[in-house]
Length: 216
Image (spheres, rainbow, N blue to C red):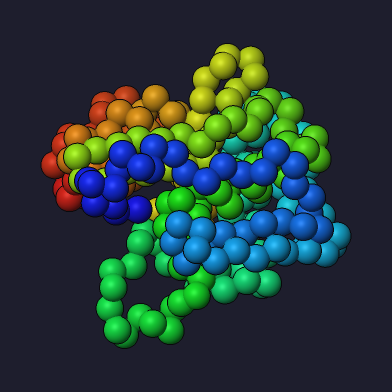
């Protein structure tokens, strides 16, 4: 989410997800900054589709993060059946007259962080997470903008991982990345997807130019 520097001092954290949530009463945010909010009752059959991603039970934390990634992506598909969030595109949309038909339903990183954290909490409360706990949202700030994402912590090691759906359209797999790498972002922009290093197994941090402009 892009935000003027003058507003940053007032927005040091996003909108935290509820401590308790049930699949028959799921709060969902959209329209930027949680301007609009719906409550979704997910049919039990559809909830079983979500839980199916955790069968069989993951033997390792890494395997469980892959399950989480797929479950969160599918949650977005299901929630999109009951809310206008099915129209959500990647990133934030610029203000243009020809995209008015895409509202309501677009989401900025505040909406995405709230929704992802809510879905993660739902998974946790239903005992689907064996290797992780859900913790506070992750936050990073640069000169021109700031960014939030959902966050989990590995039980065995204490390592934290972000679960960030903002970089993809609704229903696509979120970025799951070590929080320390996600937080190590350019001073110019906090809304750069720097997850390539972990996804490719490359141990070298992408250069500033590559992270800003996607250079190869």
